[in-house]
Length: 434
Image 1 (cartoon, rainbow, N blue to C red):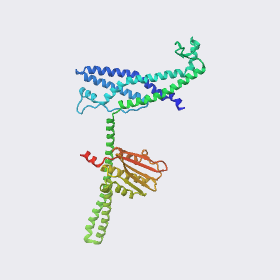
Image 2 (image 1 turned 60 degrees about the horizontal axis):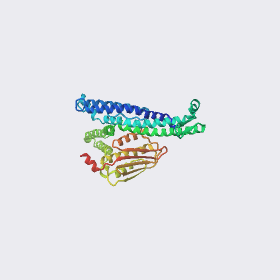
Image 3 (image 1 turned 90 degrees about the horizontal axis):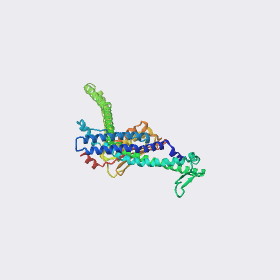
Image 4 (image 1 turned 135 degrees about the horizontal axis):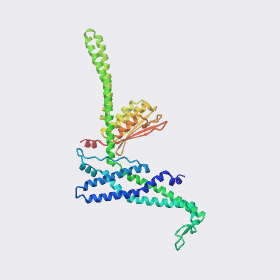
């Protein structure tokens, strides 16, 4: 039934209309491109050649905007706007604008699209109009074929009826039904061909009229940089808050207690001794808080001994038993190690707080140029990065270093969360740092 609906669906007619419009629009864009490039190229020896070429490129960029809108309406293909025209810093005026227009790869990709549009439009127009005309004509033959025999001298509907061989004539209901069946097959073929041509059209529009891969990468890096800056600022605020509310407050209270103990030392030695003993306990608590804070910044065990011992130490603090297995022949870059450590630490915290699991596991291995970290548990499942949990922030932080986070957590469990990080060995990281 889906095959029979294919040639008559709204999507097929929208895409077919788009492909038919390729020819008139292709003729217009081709004429503008060829005429403009030829005239401006011939005038390059004068001072008007380059500005005229820039104007032609501007027209073709506007044509590209029209084509992106047409693709959005007829093909359901939303192509992002390419990078805007940018003049060199500190330069303005006609010359600066002309230079920017000529340097922009968006202008030249729009030109390439305009030049390709005519041959591509001829192909799509001929293919669609031929199949639709033949298919619809044959499919509807039973509706209009009777008029040929009634109102003309022809014995029936046929092909090459004036030839010496007599051609083919259809004048019986069975023959009409057979031709209608052929027409249906042609319409189905037209539907599949339209889908295929529309897929090629989407590729052309995205590749030539969308942002370039370099611009897309720049935007991604800008977004990643924003995430890293926001995360770093949040970490600094957390450290400041922990120092202010924790160790700093304890040290202030300790200083006050020692001051009181000093005053009572001659008057009441026993009370002074008790106060010094209490101060000693406060010192231990302050030291423990400072150790915990330092571990949250970058644990010494990770620097000294690597991921295996560091993750085992994290697992020992989890409220459920955790099996840790690390298979690494060498250590990745220090930054990647740190990200893997804190990713695992946060995932194990989620296991402790939310999973209801009885046991969990941590596996770390290298796959080609990726460091793989997988955390599993037998809890009730339901973990979802789109539900506003900390997993969304974790996925953003991994994406900032070209990492990925894959979550498989069906309701009822079990949960498997896999993080893939770039390996970036230490030698390469040191070379990049230099």
